[in-house]
Length: 265
Ligand SMILES: [Zn+2]
Ligand SMILES: [Zn+2]
Image (cartoon, rainbow, N blue to C red; front, side, top):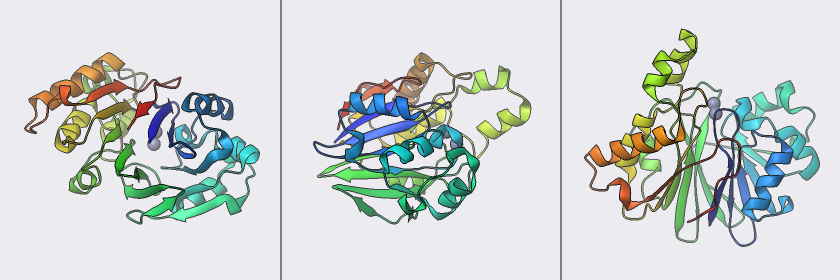
């Protein structure tokens, strides 16, 4: 299994997961053209995508969905409420409703050779989920857009070989930055986004024997820097009570505006 972050950040998200013959996308929040370019980097033809898993309806996750679907007719998987919202909003335009398949939190399903498990996250969307997935004996997850984590989230992230984890903002930059107060409150609230420090603490909790690759993603353009996220997360893991330290896994920061190096899981 390979993971390529085509784009990850508060201005657009699309993550590609592949094996030798097929793959899927998580979210389509960038233009069709940029997804196509990313699929080349991930070394998969668009026709070999088994599906697009949607986490939630915010535009940084579905911006390119309509145009992509009109060309490639890829099946889309999302929760019922998210599908309803997407189909009733004008942003995706006219799409074939037969391409949409309802999935539910905690209900595992197969997508080609991949096993997929959606799980609930706390975020200000109609019915947001994150995804854990597996192929052969490897397991990974993409978890972004969540205000906090609890035992349920930790349970869903145990025993992973790789994870793409949200490290959205530096708390000080957010506090002193230019955002209006209500927006700041939204971001650091329970239905907002994980800070670098919280991401580090979560990582300290889920680090295990198998975890070898960690990608930090969904960084804010205004309230974070890749170097800051990298250092803050390392510090939290090293200061944490878990028995693993930051050198026990490969840690990278996903690029916001272009594909990152493919991770071999
Ligand atoms: Zn987002
Ligand atoms: Zn969101």
